[in-house]
Image (cartoon, rainbow, N blue to C red):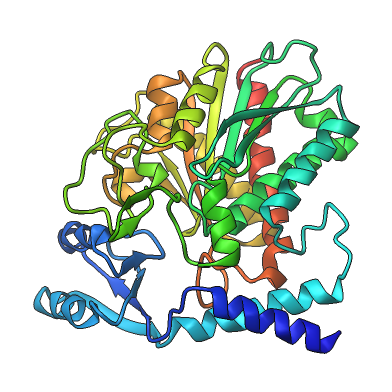
Length: 412
């Protein structure tokens, strides 16, 4: 058995993208320096692990090919920085060995096991089991198919025979392939909502829920087997680059970025060019008659962000957005000591066009919309160690629950 485990580890390493000599730098830009720094988001070989924020550390992975040019830029602009990871490949190898060994010790996968990261097939099986075992609560939809023809699953949860009579909360995750912790946090909340009668009675009393746990199934599957740090979908663009950043591809205030296809933030050739965003846009808009809250779950940064993000323009009900975000923040802080920051996306971070939360508010008639950036973990940030994931999903549940209670009170 031990030889089989090591053979599996060897083969999986051989198949994966090699990040040898990729480095990670912690960068502390001022507000004036931030805009010029974020232009590197569209450069090949540059990968922002934590989203840029003025006067706070940003973590950026840099390929060996562009390292000297990037360092010249930092030095010429007097941007404070330091190297935090000298060789990304070593970090990924250690993490993968730990995950595979943990799987080997639990040689039978008993769902739901939230101490492990699940493959996409395991996620699909979990969703189907919920639909089969709880037909009065759960309805599973195939809302579309990805570039590689995987099903994109939506799940509706309601006590009513007619879905949507109650205020609707819509939760998604997995827009960015590598953000596994966000996916499993959404799945854990779905599990509690359906399979924990106390939570069911409390939160489904006067609220209906929609989940899309994996918006980007191709990217997620690819990050599981080929490239742990893959972010985009799997669209073939040309021989030099592949993939669209789905959270830059929504129709509201979409913006074309010339010569950016090799970067991690490439928004595509036109708005809603991707089957994943087309499916999501149609699914969101199908609930616009009673759409109260949209939550898009990402990693990482410990942030609760409200619209708009495309420009320094606040949504009309920004004060109520902020107060509800503070309830999420305070509930988690009181329970675990983890502190989130609440604020406008553009203010806290930087402007970004074509994001899903802006779309939900502007085109799907949501009353409230947030992007949640969960905390980072381990030396790689979004690469949350499997050994810590159970604590994180339970912590995030506290925040999701607080949102549910607020919507229940606010609209009833």
